[in-house]
Image (cartoon, rainbow, N blue to C red; front, side, top):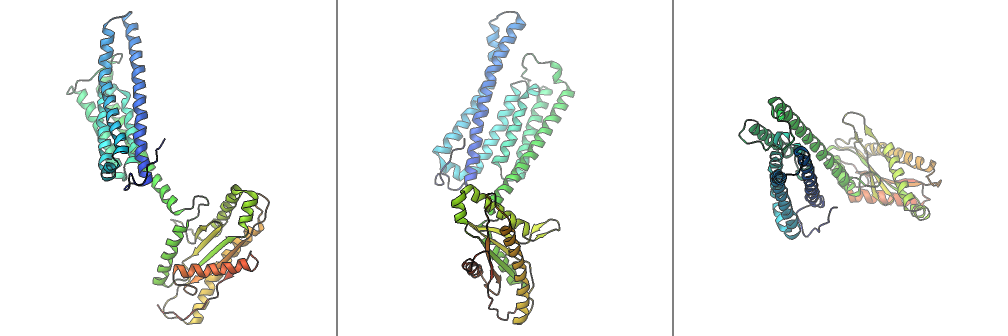
Length: 418
C-alpha cells in the first residue's frame, strides 16, 4: 500500500516520514470512497422511504433527494480535489514537499477540520453521525504531527469547532439543515448538552490515544536504532557509542572497566548443517543467556549495568562499567589489585556464559561452545580501538588454543595519576 520514494526525490525527509505522509494521503482516498458508497446507499434508502411514506411515486422525490445530497456531494468532491492535488504534487513536485512539508501538513489538517464541520452541518447538524469522522482526523495526528502539544492543539480545535457549530445551530444563528425522518425533539437543550459532552469526551480520549501511540512509535523507533533486530541485544553502532562514553567517564572518575568479546565456536558449520533458521534460533538463545547473566540495578528505575551487544555475525560483546575507582596516585601493585578484582568479575561472567552454553543442547540436539577474550581499561587500552584490539587478540588466542576457553589480556600497567 505504501509506495517507496527515492532519497533523491525527498532528500530532507526520512524514509519513515515519507511513508507516513503518503500513507495518510492514500488512507484519505479510502475514506472518500467510503463516503461515496455511503452516499449512494443513502440516496437509495431515502428514495425507497419517500415512496413508502408518500404511498406512491411523486416528481418531488427527485427534487428532495437532490436537495439532500447536493451539499454533501460537493463537500466530498472538494475533499477529493484537494487530496488529488496533494497526491499529484507529492510525485510531481518533490521539492515543494521537501521545503514546505510542515506547512503542508498543517494546511492538510486545517482543511480537514472545516470539511468535516460542513459535512456535519449539511447532514443534520447536531443529529448527524458524521461527527465520528473526527476520530479519523485525530488518528491522523499520530502520523502527521511530531509533538504532543501539536496533537492536543489540533484535537482541541476539532472539539471547539463542533461545539461552536452545535451552539450556532441550536440558537438559530445558523439554520439547521434538517434531514427527513429525524425527530425534532433531538434539537432540545438537554440533547445538545449530552451530545456536546460525548463528542468532546471522545475527541479528548482519541487525542490521548494518539499521544500514547505517538510515544510508543518513538520508543519503538529508538529501540530499532540501538537494538539488533534478531537478538534484541544492543547493536554494533550502540556498542561503539557506549564504549567510548564509558571510557570517557572512566577518565573523569577513575573507574576500571572491562570488555569481553565472545565468538561462537564452529557456528558456520552449524549454520551450514542445520540451516539459517536454526542458526538464527541459536543466536537468539545465546543472547538470552547473556541477558540472564549480566548485572542489573534493582533500584527503581531499574537499568542494566553491563551492556550486552551483538558485535557482528556470531560475535558478541559485553561492556562491564561501574567498577573499582582509581583515585589519586596509585602504585602499580595497587592498580593491579583493582584490575585483578575487575577482571575476576569479568572472568566469572564469561565463565557462567561459557558453562551454560557448553552444558545445554540446542534445539537440534547439537552441542555448542563459545570462546571469550577479556581486556580492561586502562591497563590494556585507553581508547575504543586499543581496548577492542586487546580483547580481540585474547579471543583469537582462545580460539587457537582449542576453543571453549577464556583468555585474559596480559596487562602491562604503569603507575597512573588522576
